[in-house]
Every structure is written in C-alpha cells, then in structure tokens.
Amino acid sequence: MSSLAGRQVLVGVTGGIAAYKTPELVRRLREAGAEVRVIMSAGAEAFITPLTLQAVSGHRVRSDLLDPEAEAGMGHIELARWADDILVAPATAHVIARLAHGLADDLLATLVLASEARLWLAPAMNRVMWDAAAVRDNAARLAERGVRLLGPGSGSQACGEEGQGRMLEPAELVAALSAVGAEGPLAGRRFVVTAGPTHEPLDPVRFIGNRSSGRMGFAVVAALAEAGADVDLVAGPSTLATPPGVRRVDVRTAIEMREAVMARIAGADGFVGVAAVADYRPAEVAGDKIKKSDSALRVELVPNPDILAEVAALAERPALVVGFAAETRDIEAAARGKLEAKGLDLIAANQVGDDRGFEQADNALEIYAADRHWSLPARPKPELARELVAIIAERMPLREQHSQ
Ligand code: PMT
Image 1: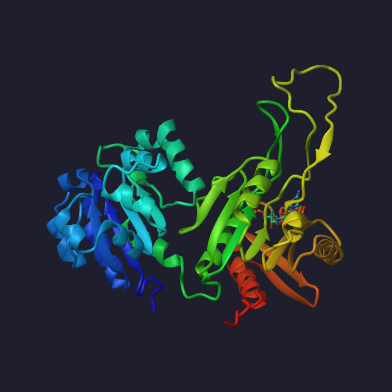
Image 2 (image 1 turned 135 degrees about the vertical axis):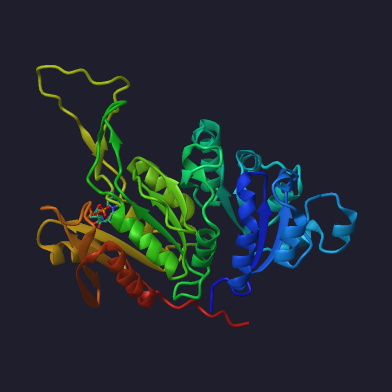
C-alpha cells in the first residue's frame, strides 16, 4: 500500500506557469491514495481554471479567505486542521517571501499559519530570481523552520532560459511526499543526522577541512527516509542534493554543527553522526587574509566539542545513538573504544586513507554494538546505508506502552 493512502493533502497553487502541471499532480496524488483538496491564489487563476482542479480533485476549489459560502462548509481553520500535508506547487518567489515573513493576507498564507501539517514547497521561477539573495534568504529561513523544499530542478525554462528554477515533475513531487510517513520499519520515528565535513576558518579565505564529500551521510539520510523516518539533516559543506522529504540545514564549522544539532535533538528517537567533524579549530581566526612571509606560520589549534559524545550524554538522549569511526588501522579496537568512551549504541567503522572511505562511491563497514558485530563488505554507499538502517531499525528500542 502507498504511504499516501488515506493522507489528506492540501495543494496550494500559486501564480506561475508551472501551475499547468497541477492537474496531473492532483491526479497522481489521488492515484497514490491521498485525499486532495486544492486552494488557489488569485494569481494562479491566470494560469489554470478552478474548474479543472475541481474536476480532478473531486472537491470545490477555494481561493478566497472571506468566502461566506465556503466558510459555511469547511471553514479555513477546519481545512488547516484537516490537512496532513500542505504542498505549495508551484511556489513562486512571492509566496515564498510571504510565508517566510508570516503574512496572513490570503487564504493560503493564513492556512499555512493556522496548520500543524507538514509544509512542502515546490519552488518554480526564472533561474535569476531563484538565485536572488532575497529569495535564497527567504527559502533558507523557511528550511530552518522545518519547511521541506522540493527542488527546484534544472533545465529549460518557460522564459527561454536554461538553469535552476523549474518546478519538479508531478511524479517527483508525489515520490517525495510518499517517502515520508511511509509504513517502513522507522515510520513515526525522528532522526537527526550529521553529514559531510566541517570547515574551520583560519582567515577570511582559508580553512582547515577534510575530504568528506557527504556521500555516506546523505546515503544514510536517504535510507532512513525510505524506511519511513522523519529526518533532520545537519550538513557540513557539500554540493549534494537533499534526499526527498528531508529537512536540511547547512552549516560550516563544528561549533555551528553542534548548535544546529542541539536545536533539533529534543524529542528525536535517533541520532547518527556520519559527519567528519574537525577535532580541532584554529584558536584565532585572522580578520584579514594572512600574508605570505619567509618565516614559518604557527597556528594554535584548540579542541572542538564532540557532538556525538554530547548527544549520547544528554539526560534525555535519543533512544539510539549511532557513531561512525574513520580509522586507518586497528579498526576494531579503535571503534570499540569509541563505542564505549562516547556511550554509543552502535558504531559503524570504515577504513580510510589510500582512496578508501572518503569521497568514494563505494565503502565497507564494520558495525559494532556492545554485544554484536556485523561485517558489510564493499558496495555502493546507498546499498550499504540501507543495510545499516536495517540494523538500526532492528536495534531501535520499542516505544514504552503507557498504561492508563
Ligand atoms: O563523506 P564521504 O566522502 O562519503 O566519506 C564518508 C566518511 C569516511 C566521512 C564516513 O564514512 C565516516 O567515517 N564518518 C565519520 C568520520 C569521523 O569523523 O570519524 P571519527 O572517528 O573522527 O569520529 C567518530 C565519531 O564522532 C563520528 O561519528 C563523528 O561524526 C563524531 N564526532 C567526531 C568529532 C567531533 N568533534 N564531533 C563528533 O560528533
């Protein structure tokens, strides 16, 4: 059965040319088992008629906040409560700005504020607009608040230009919504995952970093989402695309990563630390570019906080805390040492160096718990991540049943 079966999805259509794709989107959502209602902004009606969307959704389409007839049926607050998911597609630069600033000046913006539903945005606009600092800031602000951005994709645009700004195809949007809340073994569980490297600045143009690409961490995130988990990804600098349905926050340094993790960890069921967090950072960051000279440059390094150990030591820690260990030798002893020293439930160790582990498409993992060992030989990181997630699901403690 599709994970969309029985889900109540409110599709908000705003005024962009990609609105012509929304009848197919609604049809596909319904085919996947969702119940769909549609609301339109005034601008959307310039691109597509309410009658079309009424025909494909099977319900009257609403566009006016102050519509006495509609309010007499399902009022806007009831509609806000009704929705499990609100998908704004296409999401124009204008609606992204209004939502980022919490305006309540039309039906869609008001519903979003009045709803506890998952909020998804499928941006669609000209590539230069999508690159504009104001749009990027608004989108980042929404992502920070847990809004899920789907795309935009790249390709030829209605305006004749080529680049990033196309709304994702209806099938891709439906797949993204399906990936969350699936009936997988981790449905109903929330995970926080770190991935990628950290960059520790030396001066305005230089940093100390490492070779992590984020491939392993992003694969773990995708596998957790596929298994039905709700995932917050805290990513160090990486150019990889966010797996569908995942909330992502980008950070640079270990200190920023720690802050982002701690802001999201309360109530999480699991934490997986895949990031290659720099163990040290420069004690001082030069305000200006350090000038070349003939004498040696000495840099004092101070230890960074250990995010994984801090999460495992929280009074209300996630039920399962999983670390990674990047080792060049004595893998088992080093990994078991970290498992115990950091108070972890599982540790996934990989051999690094000599073109292994970092950056590669394939990896191999030795996974240790206090009472067990699993050996996963070399294979593509996404496959490996699925096997690790199967082990995580198996080890996840059952929720306590509260008696009345
Ligand atoms: O990103 P890729 O190119 O795909 O490469 C993948 C990988 C090799 C980076 C990945 O598989 C991996 O091994 N990640 C962990 C790297 C690492 O920092 O290992 P560590 O042994 O130094 O740290 C042990 C654990 O403590 C890790 O879970 C790490 O996230 C965590 N840690 C470390 C230091 C610190 N200050 N805070 C932490 O949370």
